Image (cartoon, rainbow, N blue to C red; front, side, top):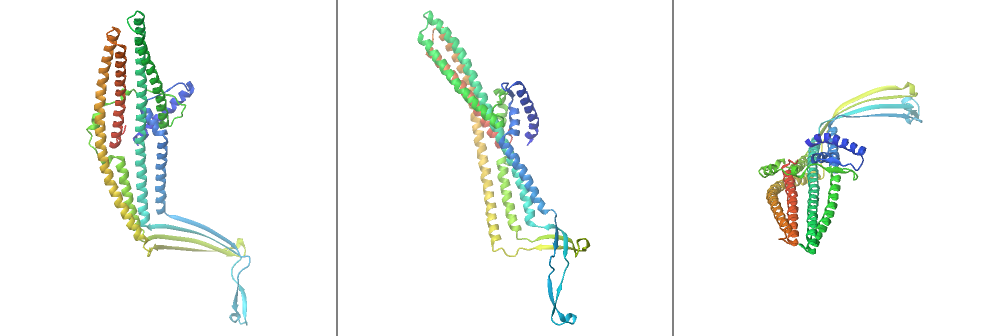
Length: 446
C-alpha cells in the first residue's frame, strides 16, 4: 500500500511524459525506468484496477451491514374518499321503533399520516454480521496487496527480459562487426594466397547465422515490449526506451541478505489470507449459533388521523405508541442444528487448511532459498566463464590472423564465446526471477 502513495507522483510524471510524447511525435520514445514502470503499473494495470474496485465494494458492503444496526424510520400518508358510506342496520327498539333502521357511519373524507421509528437494541446475527463484513474488508485489502506483489513481480521480470534480449542483440552486433573485420582481413589474405576461399565462406556463413539470430531476437524484444505495455496498461502505440541498466537490477548484497533472512510465516500474504478465511469460518459458526438468540428492538409510532365531510374541515386526532419488540426463535425444524454442525465442520476445515498452508509455505521458502542459492552460484560461474571464453576467442583470433589457427577454430571459438554470453544473460534472468519469488514469500517485494 505504501507504493500507491509513491505512485501518485509517478503517475504525474508519466502524464507529463505522455504530453511531451504527443507534442514531439509518436516516434519519440518515452524514457522509462524500472521504478517508473512499477508505479505506472500500480495505477493502470487492469488487475490492479479490478482489485481496487473490489476493495471499495468491500468497504461499502461493510457500511451496508453496519446500517442494519442504525435507527430506521418510515412514513406513510393515506387519503380516501368514501363515495358511498357504509350502511348498518340497527334494531329500531333502540329508538322506540319497530324493525331495523338503516344508519350510515363515518365521514366522506378520511386522511392520516404516520411516522414509525425502530432501533435494534440487541441482535446477535447483526453483531456477527458486522464482524464478518470487517473481516471481508480486511481480506480484500490483503488481496489487493497480493495483486500488488504479482504485478510488480511481473513488471520486474518482463523489464529484465527485455533488457537481456536487448543486451543479446548488442552482443550479436558487436560480434558481427568483429567478424566482418576478420572477414575483410581474410579476403585480403586470400588475395595474396595466404588463406583459402573456404575460410572466407566459413566466416560469411557465421555472420549470416548471427544476422538470422538477431532478427529472431528482435521479434522476441517486440513481444516483450508488448507484454510490458500490457502490464503497464499502456496503449499499443506508445513507444518507450528502458533506461534502467541491467547491472542496477543485480544486487549481490540483496541476494545474500535474502539468503540469510529468517522466514516469518505470519508476514506472508497467502498465510494472512488463509488466516482470514479461518476467521470468517469461525464467525460463520457464531452467526449460526446467534440465529437461535432473541432479537430486541425499540419501536415508536406517531400518527394523526383526520376525517370530515369537507377536505378543508377535517378534524385531526393524534396518537402515539412506544414499546419494545422481542422476537424469539422457537422451532426451525432442526435446520438451525444442521447449519451449526455444518459451520463447525467448515471451521475445522479452515484450521486444517491453515496448518497445511503454513507447512507448504515453509517448504516453499526452503525450496526458493535453494533455487536462489543455485542461481547465484550459476551466475558467478557464468560470469567467470564469459571472461575465460573471451580470452580464448581473442587468442584464437590472433592465431588465426597469424595463420596458425584455422577458420574452423575461429568460428568454434566464436560460437563458444556467444554461448558463454547467452548462458551469462540467462543466469542473470534466472537469478532475478529466483530473487523476486523469494521476496514475494517474505512479503518485501521491491
